[in-house]
Image: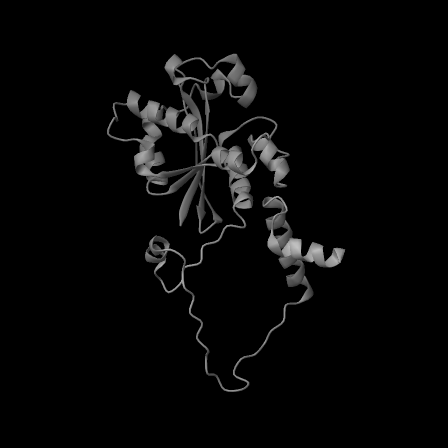
Length: 245
């Protein structure tokens, strides 16, 4: 599965006021692993950057004055994200600006949500942590993601951080496909698991026990899943009850 974690920086908050993109940052995940491939581009917005926005991301008018226009980089961007699942924090904001830029180019036949499926990690975080702060810094603190380099917002850095946050948020989510028929099973109700005994000669299987380093890594993974679930993992509850008894 190919996923693209995407973030943007802009001249201001509202496209209705003519604000434009000034930075786009994307990092690629394949099968939940960062590949090292990324797309990063500063863009000349052809307008002034609001002082309030400048305080957030630190990008000045002088920094983007010699950068290419969006129309000069749009095909490279679309080729990079096409067909992937986009992961964005507060997706309507970034998708809205990208579609606005496409509209200004008279590319009304192209909309980002038609090219890609979109996951909004802000919606996901609000569902998992209702009533709490769910901005990127808060999620970094909650999931122990290092954001010490994030003094200012930056599209590529924020995309890299969001990738770590997303992987931590979804670390306990797995899909088990049984008998290669997950679509039919999902539609027909609970899956019936059939266990078949294998007839093997004695000594055919060699049992390899985990060493101490592997056990430590396993315990760290379990602790991360337990923390991400808010302490609601069944095996931890059982251990706590056994220790209490």
